[in-house]
Image 1 (cartoon, rainbow, N blue to C red):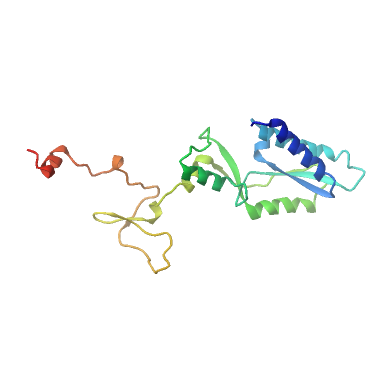
Image 2 (tube, rainbow, N blue to C red; image 1 turned 90 degrees about the horizontal axis):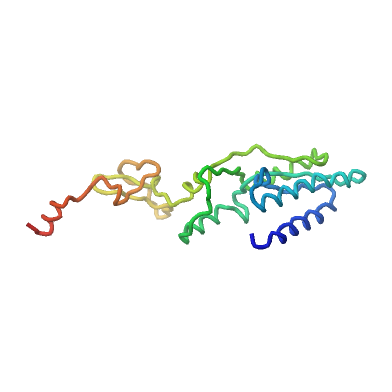
Length: 204
């Protein structure tokens, strides 16, 4: 983070501006829980400001609450295209711990989780929806190029079927490859022995 004061000022400025409305729900993140970086710290600061602001609005009709969730799939800032761009460019992914997990939520569900609390908002709530979790390494495995589900083994070859087949292609004969299967020279079960290579090259 090159300009931490800018991030803090940005969060605080938007907080003060939104507090002038009638019913307000601040959008938080799971990184605000036990934060270990500046981003999470500014988020939890915004959460606390929103909750505390109800003290100053108790004589008015303005009520403020917080909605906290995790990665939003399909949003403009989604980690999905970000990781895909990194992978396409051959850049290492920013995962510093294989044990790292995050909450995941689809965009329509996230919108609904923001809208629903308004019906019962009394002010000061921290609304946390029950949503699934996933390890980041598991997520990477899903978005990594994997053709195993479209691969079939025949007697002397593997056939990878096309993703889209508007010309009428259906399937091929053969045994479906196991999930996660890769065909690599270093893990191949067929090896050319030196004596065989000598015979091919005509070396006595």
